[in-house]
Each structure stands twice: as C-alpha cells, then as structure tokens.
Length: 388
Image 1 (cartoon, rainbow, N blue to C red):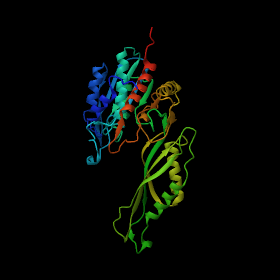
Image 2: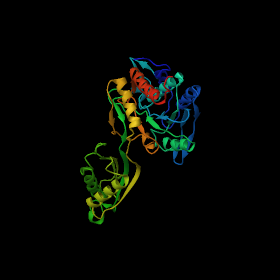
Image 3: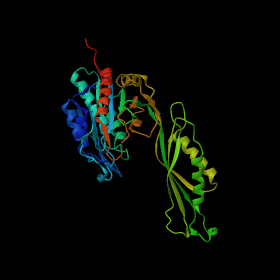
Image 4: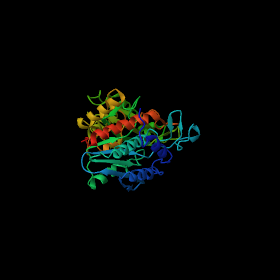
C-alpha cells in the first residue's frame, strides 16, 4: 500500500505524546492547531464552560469556502491509562514496535484524527480542493459531553458555517479497517428508581415498611419484559440494571429507601417519552401502591442517516480500497455523531476498536495507511476539481 506524505503515523505519534486525559487538553489541540494553521486552515480554539462541569478546550479549523463542505469530527481527550505499570509501552510515549504504534488514544480516537489530517493535507497539497474541509475537535467526548461538541457545533453554525456531510472518526471497524460504516445509533436513557418505605427494626416488620422487596419486584419486571425484537434498521432495545443500592450497614434495620440505576439502549420503535411511560407503567404494575420516584437523568434519541449522497460514494471508496463494501451498522453505544443528525448527513468511520480503553492500546501502522487512503480518496471525489 502506498505510504502517504504527510504521514498519519507521524501525526499520531505526536498526539499520543500529549497526556490529554479528559478533560485536560494536554497539548494535543495545540499541536493540531499548529499543523492546521501551517497548512492554511483558519483555526479557532474556543473554551466552553458550564457550572458544575470542567472547562473544556475545543478546536475548529476550516480550509476553503462554499459547498461542498465536509467536516471531520473527533476528540483528543482520552480515558485514564489505569495502572501504568501494566503497560509494556508507556501510555503517553507514542512508541512504535513490531508494526504497531502504542499509546492511550491510538484507536480511540487520535488515530482517526491523524488519518484525516494526513488525508486533508495531501488533498490540499494537490491544489485541487473546491468547497471546504473543516475539523471540529473536542476535548469532552470521554467526559460528560457538556462543553464539547454539544456547544462547539452550534457555535460554528452561529458563525455562518454550513456543512454538507460529516464524518466522525470513532473506531467503528470490527475486524479490518473499513469493514463497518456506522449510519446511525440507538438512543440511550439513564434513570434512577428510588423506592421509599419506613425504617424500623427487622424483628418488628409490621412497624416498618420495607422498600427492598418492592424494588426487587420492579427490577424483575422490567428486566424480564421484552422491549422489542428489533427493527429493519436497528438491533433490539435492551435494558441493563447497573447498580442496586440500599446503604444499610446493619442486619437488624429495615431501610427507609432503596434505589437502582439503569441504562436503556432503544431503537426507532421508541422515543424518550414512550420509553419513560413504559417504565412507569411496569413499575406501577409490579409494585401497586409503592411510593417511588423515577428520575430520568440522561437521554439521547436514536438517529439514522439515509443519505445516499454520502453513504454511496464513501462505501464505493471503501470497496475500492479494501475489496469489499462495508456493512452498514447502527450497533453499539452513543457517540458525538448524535449532535450532527439535525445539521447534515453524518456517518462514523474509523479504525478497528479492539484495543480501545485497554492496557497497551495500539494500532497497526498498516491500518493507519489504509484509513488515510480511504479518507483521501473520499475527499478527492467529493472536493476535487476535474482535470481540464
């Protein structure tokens, strides 16, 4: 496979050496800003704030103007490395060994940023770009996702930016680069159930009101009741109980309150409103008369991209590079692609994610070359002038 210059591995190595554990910028965006500005991009680095959350540095850079306008979205923040002593290669050294590049964020998702950067600069070097290329990069994807893309995208739109298509560089490939193209995501709902009773002595239960059995019946009901069997475009919805808490250290005390936390991933058969109503109905039926609260804390709705103008050309390029068209998928959790769904068609395409968030996170150098080539050919088809 042809090695491209500028080289994605060089860019990635520099990014990996920036300890940008969320929400710290760690020098990663400063490095990107320098490279992009040197290539002729107009670069802005807004920081967003909100009470109760950390300030977050972001980056927006654009080259060219008009349409078509392709925006690449990603994040430079990474999860903590964990026990550094367990790493065979230091998490922030960017070491290359045996055909791999090691470091926290190698696939999630500094590698995707490096590949798109190499592809974009190669296209610009050809001098045939029409329209515009933009980078929309946050430092708040692995964090609460409050001061990142959720604010950066409206900020860009308010300044007159208009996007025709977006690529989010999350590590969506399953086995080989390009084998999967994410064209949508299920929605997510996180909630806490609090059941209230009356504290008392466990030897005198008639003088108390134990909330635990009520909560157990509620949880049994919602985890054993099928939400759906999937749809034409999405996997089945599913509910997971992720925590059950009473906070009672004594054996002879009936607690006054019991709670559970749950997370639901839902498809296009549901909305946040209909799913919340489903939960309340089943909780009521499982424990009639129980005093409880259902606090829906975090939600995002499902989305699906049906734009053949984006999916068709990108799938064709992937097939040319890999020899096989990608599987169109809506599986997995959520991502920052959800923020683009009402702005422009959006897909997710990135590296193989088999080592993301793990010790010795790494990416094959060959995978960087392949993803760069896919991005580059897509940009050339989308933005390149035809030769006279």
